[in-house]
Amino acid sequence: MTPPPNNEKLLTFRTKFCYGVGNISIMMGKLAPRELAMPIYNVLLGVSPTAMGLVLALGRFIDAFTDPLTGNVSDRTKSPWGRRRPFIFLGVIFVGLFFTTLWWFPRGLSPHAYLLYFIFIAFLYYISLSAFSVPWYALGYELAPDYDNRTKLMAFAGFLGPIGQMLVCWLYRLTQMDCFKNDNLYRLTHLVMFQGDATTTGLRVVTVFAGIMIALFGIVTAVFVRERNANAGPTSAKPRPTFFAGAKAAFQSQAFVRLTVAFMLIQLGIQMVGVLGFYNFVYYLNDGDKKAGSFLYACHNTVWLVSNMIFTPIIARLTARFGKKEMFLTAIVWGIMRMGLMWFLMNPAHPWGMLINGAMMGVDNAAIFMLCHAMIADICDVDERDSGHRREGLYGSLYSWAFKVGIAMASLLSGYILDFIHFDRTLGGAQTSRTLFLMKLSYCAVPAMFSVLALAVFIRYPISRRYAHEVRAELDARKLAASKPQN
Image (cartoon, rainbow, N blue to C red; front, side, top):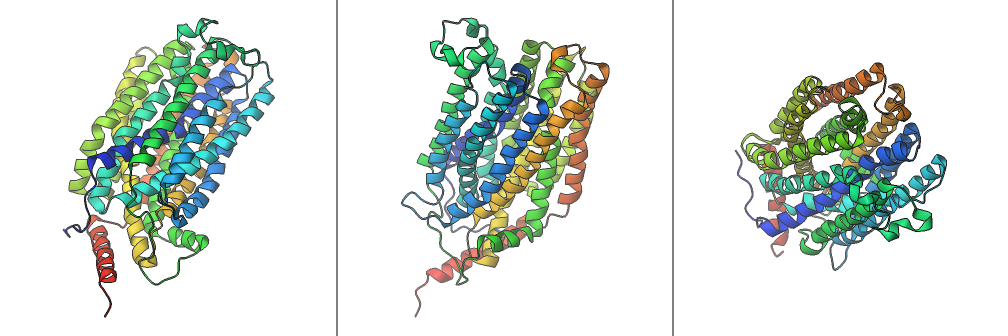
């Protein structure tokens, strides 16, 4: 085994922790609108699920195309605060603000008007999310100096990120609390234009606090993490390639393409039927009881996320021993097996058996998300060796672009899936047996099929630990040579 370079200082616990805290905001920002959109805008306000699926898809398309621009601009930015931190600081403040605004809609509008309101605010929200998330990822890719330290850094993000996911999975359940039935409890939510029922009162109060939390966790990263390449210059005499030349080089990289496509396929399968999680837990497992179903759904997701946190350091240790590629492949196989078992765990007679799925889900989720970003950092080293420039923002944004295009397609299809299975919100728990069967089948089978495709794509990923160390050593030698005075 080629030893890692030793000319870089290891990251401190404070740096790794403060970077990881930002992932709480990332997870809340990415998942909260999708988690609340269908239950609120479809079930409560009557907006068509197909229309909502289309809008959620368009939102992902928007930030999919703003991500590369943000990444390219942050790569080229020079300021007293660095390349990434100004974007992180301002971006996350606007993310929190527009997230809250999404749910402070006037009452008494038509479903069409509610849809237009969501479209306008979501447009601003996703632009802000792009401005925050792309520099945050790029900051992580450049912070850690070598192959194994990157896994350790992403382990902190992988450990803390589920806290944000956990908060998201309880948001809808919190809106159903009995305290929000008191019309005199929160006067601000009962101004004439905002009058509503207990759910909307709870929604507004809960999302105000959620928006504040999103902003605060992201600000921690911006304030307390110092950039390793704050004003990075070229490491060779080659001129900096244009954005399109850089994008072309990225998509010609076998490692980048295989990693990106594999992750996109996994997420496409999960997100395409992700919205069915709420519907399965409420209508399939609990006969339309929203309180019981949303409570079980939140408990399931909490178990999953706690499992994610428990297994993240374990997987990081195993990765240090066996390698990133090997652990990533193992995680995909584990996920396929888990989805097959989930068919038997989804039993209305024993709905709490789904907690077993939640515990198992933490394993593949922890490995896949943590290792993807650690591997992109390795890919950025290979690119620096070949191009002479640090372009974490470009690679992170292109990765995000491909991922979000997949998520946009999944969001679009999710609305059609609800229409295809003939879900009727007016029937409540009296959905037809065909609808319930297709609801369960889609939830189990679709992610498994896409994971099989991801396995076939990723199995030939070319960057091993040895190769990554050799590239890093070559880069360190270049820097050492460049630092010596010329005679």
